[in-house]
Length: 257
Ligand SMILES: [Zn+2]
Image (cartoon, rainbow, N blue to C red):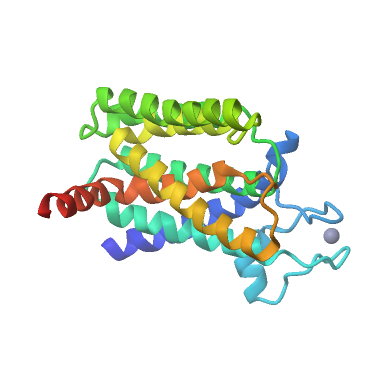
């Protein structure tokens, strides 16, 4: 029976991944993300070509009107969404169905935020409210996390980034982090609680440090601005699923000494 759920999760994950590609591309300009269209000429793809993965495998990854090639990234986003939904299913299968669906929605939202930020485009304001709404719904679906822990998570996550923003602004006279990062951490803290919020900060900062070190060594460009919300999104996805386990392992490690 579980195999049926796994296959259903993967298929649904792929289909939503297809929608995510359009959302990443079109939400910043306020367009409706359906149907899927060619990036060059705007022709709508047929439903059989909806998924970039399927179009790629079947050799139909060019637009029939203008011949433009579909980006490989689109297939990767579809596969990543399906894979992360599967991990989420395996992590939360014993939780409530509501919490499982909220985790699916949150993962896809973070992928969307991560890529819009990576592309250097503006995130729509409602996306933070959507994550907040998921957090409010989760109060009724996830009894393991108390409201108190969520509020501490929001204050801790948002507060930490607001403080970093202020320190950067006062010491360096420039905006190191944006208010969008502060908002994202605050709503993520409410959604996941303070434990996962801590892990998001640690993990997101670690990923950022590694990627930025590699990029700056390669290009020698230290003044370019980087999309921190993209790193927060990676940290949030990992922490949402494994944050508590990671924090417990971390505490255990220190209690040995
Ligand atoms: Zn085209």
